[in-house]
Length: 287
Image: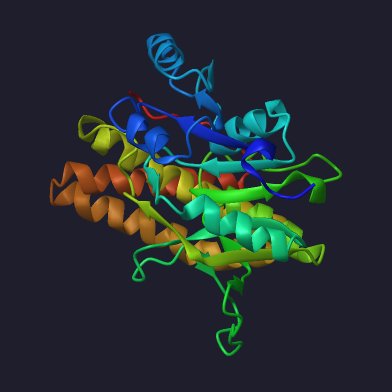
């Protein structure tokens, strides 16, 4: 079946996102099917959203990470297409119209993404910069950012989506790389624009703790991703100088009494160290 609003479910993972989620929901086509995985265990948010919107189902749970939560939403939805979006994403009036129009002509993709309206921050990667995408409607890319990716479930016969070992960061790159290895297509629709607020899916009062979490998980996920796709020896050798640098940076900021920077490099060291030694992605933001 082809993409249509009747054959599509939006999956939104929230975490302390009460202040922003309404803007996201109200930018989507009316009466869309929406599943929200509420990762901060906020039962009140479920009550508020389900009372306000008749087309929304909210699943409340402890924080299981982006990949795991998205997987739950994808597997719960009954449609052939699942549109994974972050709560700080807003659609334009014609975003879905353009995506449906493109999909009706080119339906051979595993993943389709709209294009970010800020050209300074593209939401896709093309490894070979010498390859030019001349098609007027879409870009054929290597990967897209996880804050807006439309998944064609018909292309996932194994029912395996995001790697749940990854709590945060690079779960989208891992998914895209696996599909590219299977010779699947990943497209970005040139005419279907979205606006990404970027890092606004949580309140400012949580910024410092979220920053610590970001640094820990980025380093853990980066080593795990490289080990998974390129092997342990190569990943270890390229990470060793970084690990040593983090130790020096930690002691430098300790001596200069810069508490915030000291904690940042402690988080980076800890995340990388744990990943190198095969420990699970255990750190959780304390909010």
